[in-house]
Length: 318
Image 1 (cartoon, rainbow, N blue to C red):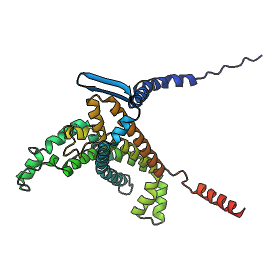
Image 2: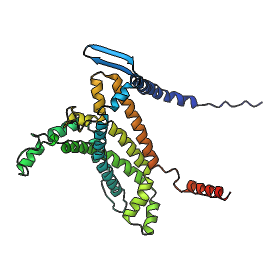
Image 3: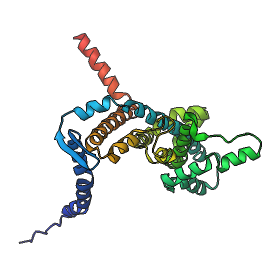
Image 4: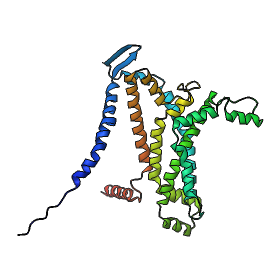
């Protein structure tokens, strides 16, 4: 009789290797998330040395936030994100298209990638401190402008709404456009060169090739960029916090939702902070779902739409 050869299964080792991830996710992400949602239904804060709660109050924290300045701070967050993201995605697309165009034969692409990615390696807090020193009334920017005779008195950049928001948007742009450019370059380089060659033979110009070939084919990466940028925008904290010393000046026009959340955490108001965190979680989920549906076409060749039209025509004939 022939002996049956025993097959060795290595599947169990795969589960063993991914076990640390699930343990860390459970301890550091899932349990805190559940605990945050639980605290949002309780009155739990510290007043001086006196600790109040936790007392169950239902949806009172959520209702109180709707009556607060939360929508104003949400509008501030949106404006600051738009100021930084629009130039970021536009310039990243232009640079990515330029550096991946094989007809131009540009040299030094690797050095260019390193240079534009360097600001992303600097801590946002250090970046904010640098800009705070540079654009202060006694900073080098005002000194240079005064010495050139362009201004007579120092400009208080952080004393106006436009100046403060512009500086925050500029910092966010400088920190993230390099990362976005490199991702878009990788996406464009993943497109088959045969497609671009065929478009040239058909007489397709540069603009048409960009809008009708490049953009549709890199849509998944654009969706990823937009979703991560939205999440990062909702979490915007360190740059405006340091630049405005946590006050959101002038007149709280640069106060973001996370700065508002941080003010509740500083006052030990865990119930209100938990409710605001739940609101942010819901908003992030809704926005990401909308972006995903808008940028991902489940029917790229139109076959599903054609099948639906045929089914409707068949039902009408009956």
